[in-house]
Image (cartoon, rainbow, N blue to C red; front, side, top):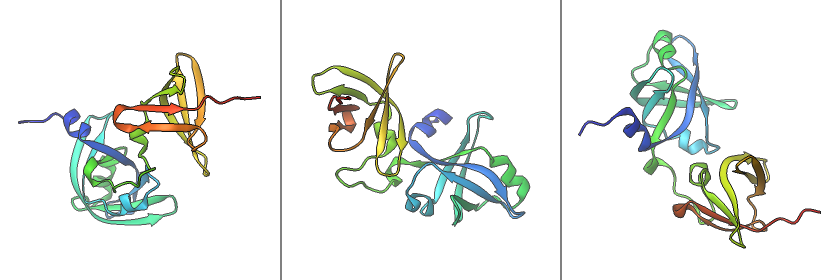
Length: 176
């Protein structure tokens, strides 16, 4: 069966983006979407996709090294700065199975984004449209029509997360 680019992407998750070239031998600067260095350091066979240009590449990762907040990646088939220039702007996708397993109370952002949030009373708060990383805890940005509600991802606020049902139950916050 022939798969479309969209089928290929739907089976995978974006873990970062090629933001620039580095040097003359085809290395690229990679901006990770994850805070897990292990995911980036263990990249092997990946799909690169550029939405604007509608092009994709199947590539193997030769090496990864950290550079400040970015990583430098060398792909097997990319040996010149000109070849590296062609993949600039591409997102890097891996298969979901390649993500490290999580502990009981952990989650990946993609599992939380799009979840419906309800208060314990059953009242709908809206859908999770973004997650803010504050350093101490994540904060859900929940939107319903034009109203946004911020809900901290802490035990005092979150009653239950049902990732597979895309549902979160939260305590109604009482602000003074």
